[in-house]
Length: 191
Image (cartoon, rainbow, N blue to C red):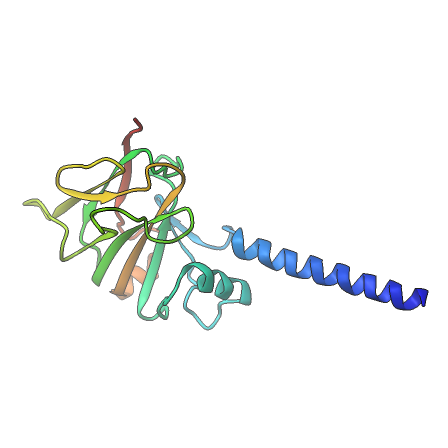
C-alpha cells in the first residue's frame, strides 16, 4: 500500500511540475532566442516547421490565425525606443516610412493580447490608410486621449503592445531581421 501511495504521489508531483512549467513558459515565453530590431522583437521560428511545441503554444494563445513564416513576419514591441515599457496612459509617436513588403499594418493590443476597445473602433493603421507627408513619412499617435491626425487609441492604463505585420516581405527583410528599417516608437510624455 505504501508503494502505491508513493507512486501516486510521485505521479501527481510530476504532473503538477510538468503542467506548471509548461504553462509558465506559455504565459512567460523566453526572449533569449528572438531577434531584436530597435524596440521591435521577432522570433524567426514563428510560423516555421522548426517551431518547438512551446513556440507553437504561445502562438496559439496570442497569435490567433497567424500565417506561415513564408507569408508574414510578425514583430512585437512592448517598449519604446528607449526601452521603457509601453503604457496605456502615455502618449507615443510611431513613425517611419513604408517597409519593404507587399502590405504592412501596425496594431495596438492591451495587456490581455486582445484589441483595445475604444469608441472609434480603431485598432490599427496600415500602408493604405495612414497619411504620409511629401517625403513618404507617416506619424501615428498612440494615446488614450484624442489626437490630431492618425490617432490610435490606447488603453488608458496598464501595459500595451504593438504588433507589426509584414505581409509578403522582400527576401532582404528575411535576411536582415535585425537591421531592416522599422518604425520608431517615441514617448512624448505621460499625463
